[in-house]
Image (cartoon, rainbow, N blue to C red):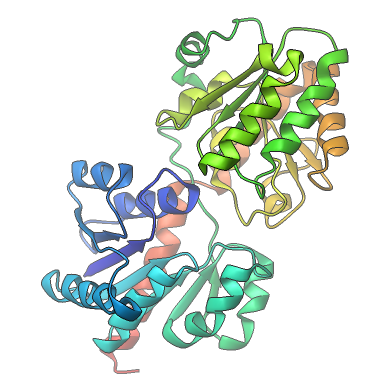
Length: 367
């Protein structure tokens, strides 16, 4: 069966990376993945190198009619049997419309804040066009409960790539971080929702802690958001000498191994794969109790679960890590065991394949 997987972004962002990991993990004896993106980018090349047929269908045309035509063209030429659209974005909507036009089942993977503007604006489209709605959190599940189409499937991580023995030396050497330094790091988009400035403000307060402490901000973002974060760090002598902005990096396993503690400072998250990646590398994390994070983390056993992303809250947790370094290794080992037991990419792919088989079976029976 040919499965068309649709992502609006080809960048190394959590939602798109998760979809690509799914495509690469599908059982080739059962399913053949085909990819479609709104523009060219990193993940297009990654999938093509893996032998997966990839299409770029731009956002264009009056009322996006050319996007709809492009979606129909991909569906027809690739002889698609099922369309899997990723995220609550309008680009996904046009592929879902094209799929229903061709009487194909649609699996819509929702990853966004159920109270956010993006999901609210597309909620009726998702409910009406989808055959199944895959969600990550209990809040998302409740938002679509009345449709009778919801199934909750957790993200998974590739534990052959993310593992403790990939080595931290390359990352630290490249960015001139001392071998003996204690490093807190954020990995992901630089933006308001991710709490980048809150992380930096909490880091600023660490100036009185003492010790060889460094801070890494790994990832890119909108130019204005990146400029604001860099400007804030430059204005403080302590931060300016100890904060590294790496930009976008591809080798995230080395990054995770190069950190001592990952900091998730988001206002809201659904099921952040960055947290799974950190755990798979045997690293503890500081993260807020939002979305499904309390389900991923075991408080005080795999990391430090905090109540919110306020500066004071993050700073207190970071201070705690520095004061009690001896517990961090134990937390990291427990985190590794947890992710290998519950959150592997194989588990994730297996559950998605079950959804595919179910909806394709229903289509065959004419339901």
